Each structure stands twice: as C-alpha cells, then as structure tokens.
Length: 315
Ligand SMILES: *Cc1c(COP(=O)(O)O)cnc(C)c1O
Image (cartoon, rainbow, N blue to C red):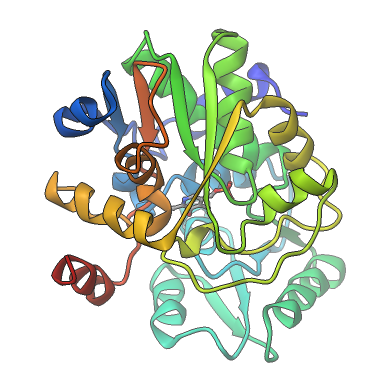
C-alpha cells in the first residue's frame, strides 16, 4: 500500500517538472448541486493529463536503466514519453498496428520511439515485457505501481492546500492509480473526507472487480470516457485493494450523462475529454450532491477536437 509519506516524497521529487494546476469555483454546478463545487483544472497539466505526476515520479525513482517502456498509447504513454525526455532517458512505447496514426505521431513528437507490434494491445504488452526482461528497460505500468500511485496522490496535496475545507473529492476511476493516490493522501490528512469514484457504465473494470471481490476482466466497449476503459489486471496488487478500502462511493454514468458533462464544462470554458467530465456529469444528473465543499478533478484534456465539436453541435 502507498501512504502519505510516499506522496510527500513524490511531491518533492516531481516539484519543478509538473505544474501546480489552479482550482476554480463553478457557480453553475454549485447552484445545481446545492453547495460549493470546485473544479481542479488538471486538464491544464503538461501533456494534458495528471498522468505526468505518476510517470515523472516513477522515472525519478529509477536507478541505471537502458530506458523506459510501456504499452499504453493514451495519456500514460504520453506522460511517460515526456518524463523520460526530461531525464534524458530513452522511451519505447509499444503499440499494436491498430493504434490510429495520430496517436503514433503524438508519441513520436514527444521524442519517444513508437514500436508497432502485432494486432492487439496484448502483443504490445508482450513486447514491453521483453524489453524489460532482455534489454534492461524499466516497464512503467499506468497505475499498478507504488511510485505511479504516489505521484498521482500529489494532486490531493494541492487540492487540500487550495480548498482546505474540502469535504469530498470526486475522482474519475479506471485502473485506480489516481483514486488510490488521492485517497491515501487526503484521508491521512483529513480522515473524514469522502472519496467518490466515478466511471462509465460501459465496461467499468474496477466496478466489476469490486462487485466480484477480486480483479476480473470485462469486455471493453467504446465510450466517450475512453481514458477510463481497459482492465485493472488480473494480477493487480495495489490499486484494487486500495480502492476497495479507501473509496466511499462509486457512481456509474451513461454515455448521455457524460456527453452532458463535456458540454457543460465547455460552456464554462473547459475543453475536457470524457473521463474528465464525469464529476460534472454526475452533479448534473443529480447523482452527486455533496458533501460540500465538493472538488471535482478535471483529469484530462485529450479529446479529439472533431469529436468535441460534434458533441457541442449535437446539443
Ligand atoms: C488515466 C486517466 C484516468 C483514470 O486514472 P486511473 O489511475 O487509471 O484510475 C482518468 N482520467 C484521465 C484523463 C486519464 O488519463
């Protein structure tokens, strides 16, 4: 398990490499919810998502390595590429032939090698494991890693500095690295604070695993909250037990509700991806009514601009 000490150490290690992102009070959401609703604008983080915190902390904790690798093509892959470049380390992001060209380009633009391998993300994982086993690369997973969790937890330290009276934090939930880190830090400092996880109804692996009492696989379905898709790993060691023990509530949302959240945040000037809109979506759906002050984490900005435009037009 990851505790407050590791999160405090992570804050020292990543200081200067990640932004302290601002918070803002949302008048509209506060009125809708019936109490103060604050937005933590982490979608403005370098690389467009909080993942830079965990990746930077994990890279900082490495000894001599040939480089770093992962099979994530989303926000974690991007963050790891950035963190590696900042340390002058080689990064190899393994991905399948099916990954869209723009994602491949985005990884290359950050100075990382995009290694295209096989027809599925499973093949890409095997390649990342081979690099780790045979070539001295450090495999940095997107969530189930103590330094990654501790890095994500630094977000809670900022939130409690910025909104000291915060009574609850709503956290987008996928593999649980963000929720585990935020909850570990926030509850150590403020035992009464409530940590509310939010996922989409379509293919929420952590929700299914909690219901089953152990990590289980779920079919991955297309969702507006694409950063919340994917499994938690059948061999999950850290985030499953931490989320199980530290999360107070779990809310699952429909695609329509998530779309409403994206549109609402755009109306307040925040262009966010679906994963980052779940807190606002839950408030607007009447599913999240405090306790107050309530802080919503806007976790990432990386939505396809054409898709964002389509969502706004469809309103
Ligand atoms: C990764 C990610 C999440 C979920 O984080 P986990 O640690 O996997 O639970 C939420 N929002 C965005 C934008 C992400 O990139």
